[in-house]
Length: 254
Image (cartoon, rainbow, N blue to C red):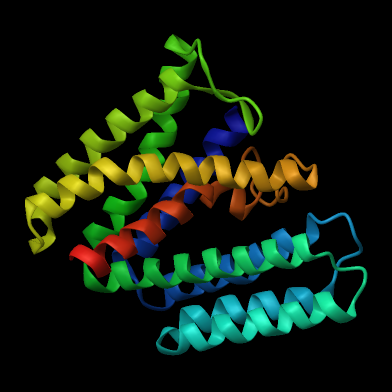
C-alpha cells in the first residue's frame, strides 16, 4: 500500500505539472503514453512479441495524436493493414487483430483529446481527470464500507453495485463543483450538468472494459512499470473512456 501511495503521489505531481504548463512537457508525456501503452498491449498476448504489430499500432496511435486532421484516413488504413495481416499470417487470430485495432483507436484518441483539452483550458483538462480519479477512489471506499452486491463478477469480482453508485454520486458532485468554481469554462451549466452525470458512469465502464481485456488474455496487469499500480494502461483505464466521452460531448453539445 505504501508503494502504491508513493507512486500515486508521484503520478499526481507529474500530471499537475503537465496540465498546468502544457507544451513540450505534456507532449512528451502523451507521446510516452502512446508508445508505451501500445507496447503494453502487444506484450500481454500469449504469442511471441510481434514487432510488426507493435510498430503498426504505435505509429497509428501517434499519427492520430499528431495528425488528427487525417485521423479517419489513418484509422481506416490501419484497419486494412491489420486485416491483411489476419489474412496472410495464420498466427494472428481475428480476435487479436480486432482488439489491436480497438486499442489503437482508444489510446490514440485519448491522448489527442487530452492535448486538445489542455490547449483549450487547463482547468477543464483537470475536470476530466478529476471525474475518473474520484469516481474510482470513492467507488473503492464506498464498496469496502457498504458493498454487498456484486456488480459484474465475470469481469471484476471485487466491484460492487453499492461502490459503483457511490463512485458515480461523488464523481458527479465533485466534478460539477469543480466546473462551477471555474464558471463552467464559459460553456454553460447545462452542458457540465450533463457531462458530470454521464462521465462517472462511462469512467466505471472503462475500468471494467480494460479488466475484461486483461481477463481475456489471462494477465493481472498490463506491465509492472508503476510500482503498486501495474502499467500505464492499468492507471489510465477509466481515464481513457472518460476523456473520449467528454470529447464526444464537446463535439456534439459544446
